[in-house]
Length: 301
Image (cartoon, rainbow, N blue to C red):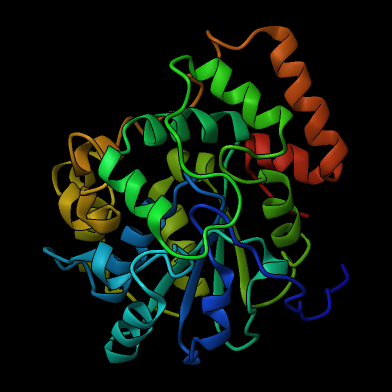
């Protein structure tokens, strides 16, 4: 098994949600934890898991405030950078950037979460259709917007999915470049890939693996609280503390953001031809092993 070279940032990404340039000014600490993922793949779940490991099962944590999406275009970069600089606990920060637009630091830990693109887009549809007009206006009014603005999605989730698939990521961004760039560094010692399916199948076991990777020791009597606080029911009940920006950008608030946490909702809405088109695109964009892992999870070579 070969170890890839340390990745370098080779480009910037600007779109209606993201501005990658903020990472150029971010001051890393050697114990930082980066949570990287394509959106709607389990990011908020991972933020909750890591907060529970760091704070040993503590309740009442304002995870959405502690762990910002740094490359989101709001609030202003200086506000987020100053807030992170003031944090004294072990920091855990999320990004939705592909690796070639991210400033990779070999001294910090990176966790990447994967999920089948069809499940991702069904979750993304719920996310997009529930964005408030005020949030859309805010995103579209931030200076230096690049590309098309945020707009309401079509009423039909299948139409939303096919538009995304056929237009290489519009109205959001490309899944393929995101997973491909992080997959390429899966063998680096400071990178861990976790799959949504594996977290669903064995959350306690996966959280213990995460703790080991992050070199966080947890007393056995603390584990029951951690597992409870990372459950879907607990996160739904405490959504205001967990989801981004306290849930304000979505109709119905934070509980709308934490929707169902299930897979396969696309199965009765996508046709066999639709699925074949998705799977063909996946094979064109990714290696065979990456295609398998993205669809199923499980062991990684």
